[in-house]
Amino acid sequence: MRLIQSLLLVLALATVAGCEPASTTSGGDMKFSPVTSQFKNTDVTGLEYAKDFALTDHNGKPRTIADFKGKAVLIFFGYTQCPDVCPTTMAEMAAVMKELGPLADKVQVLFVTLDPERDTQALLSKYVPAFDPRFLGLYGDKAATEKVAKDFKIFFQKVPGKSADSYTIDHTAGSYVFDAQGRVRLFVRHGQGAAPIAHDLKLLLEAP
Image 1 (cartoon, one colour):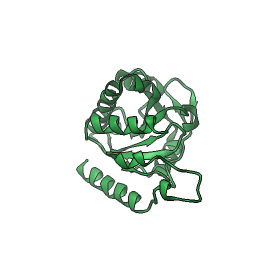
Image 2: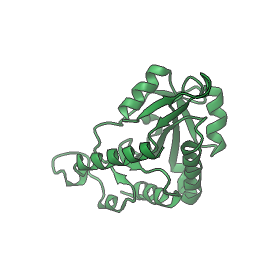
Image 3: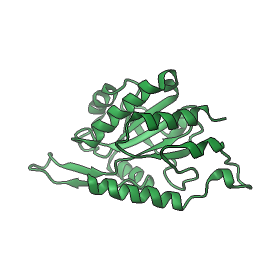
Image 4: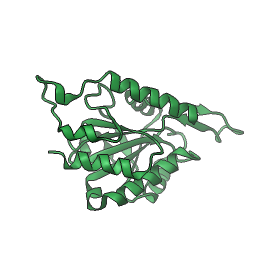
């Protein structure tokens, strides 16, 4: 996973280098508060990818980013049998919700499985809400999973195990954050603890 996290950092830095902050654009209609310069995580405002998805939640309801308008959305890609990064991230997000207090009701955490072969709706409905009952698991078939991973530039690759169904999956360890208007705004690094993430979500939720 160290290699994946290193690649992820390179991706995040490349993304920043290729984006002009929307607040400096005079002719566009996307203008954000200067408060965004205080983000602890990577500001990716104006990103030309990671804009939407079409998946099904663990209750069987079709979902897109528009369903969560009015809330900040944090979206993480993983799989339920992940031994380290995924449960650590989900536990971290549960801690973020606690730190946000009443503002947590304005945040939606989404867990997108990269393992539709094993992560059924029934399994996701038990795994994801175990961290926080407000969290939602999302899934699609193989084609939909590959599409959303490509759209969000998420790397994932099966690593064979001792048997056909005991494989693991190497994957990108970071998360994306959308603002309440459904625009991608942040790339969140893995393993930094709850405080920086809660800080950035508060900025997004409290910005005019």
